[in-house]
Structure formats: structure tokens, C-alpha cells
Length: 160
Image 1 (cartoon, rainbow, N blue to C red):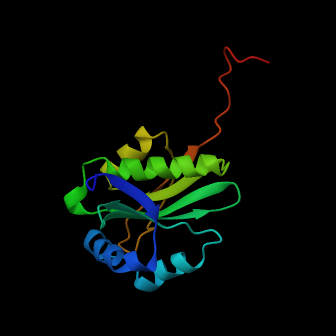
Image 2: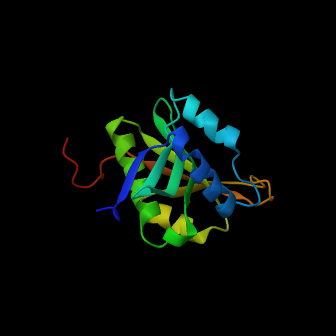
């Protein structure tokens, strides 16, 4: 049982582990302790979460639940736990939470060069809708992706 992935709200107790992962995953521009602390303090819209195997933080995500939408700000999975479907499970969890909250869409930015992440999001129904040139500190472009949680009914076969 301790090897099963659990996703739960992030707390201050998780912060050191999350920061260590963030710095390992994004050495050219990691979020700071203060950035994560702000997410933990402003829970009016922020819903940070961690993915745990046993008591070990193997992933995390920072999200904003806005009026009609959810914005995925940051997601990371420990290199030793990648390619196990954990990122997919985390995004699926987010989609479920967005649907429970009757949100209409989920938006995110992903590095243009991060093909694995773009494939993951596309496989979950996200569409690439825009490009933000020079978005990241490194100068790399960001691809804006959107998942419509209430797509219109199909024209053919729709009942009126």
C-alpha cells in the first residue's frame, strides 16, 4: 500500500521536499520558497498539491482555481519517479477537481521544447492555442494549452 501514489493538499511540512525537487527539475529558474509560501497562504484561489509515495514527495503542482477556470502554474515529478504515469495521474486529479467545481476550462503554459509534457497534455485533451515568445527567463517560448471541460455537443446526432 505504501507504494501507491496519493495526491493531497500541499502543506508547509512538504515545502523543503518540494523546493529540492523544483531546484533539481528547473535549475535555470526554479520557483523560490517565497513563491511556494504565497501559494500556501492564499488559499482563496491557490490549491497547491503534492503527490506522495509513502511519505515521500514525488511530485507537486501549483494551481489557481479562478471563477470559471483553473490555471496550472507549475507541475513537477521527481526524476526517479518519472515515466510511471504520476504526472498523468496528477493532471487527471486536477481535471476531476475542476469538474467538481464546475469550472469551464483549464489553461497552462509549457516550454515549447518540452515535447513529453506537450504529448501528455495533448493526450488528455488539451489543445495548443497560442505561443508566448520568450516567456521563460531562458528566453524559451511557451505554448499555451487549454482543455475545454464543457465542449459543445456534436452537431450530427445531437438531440434538440
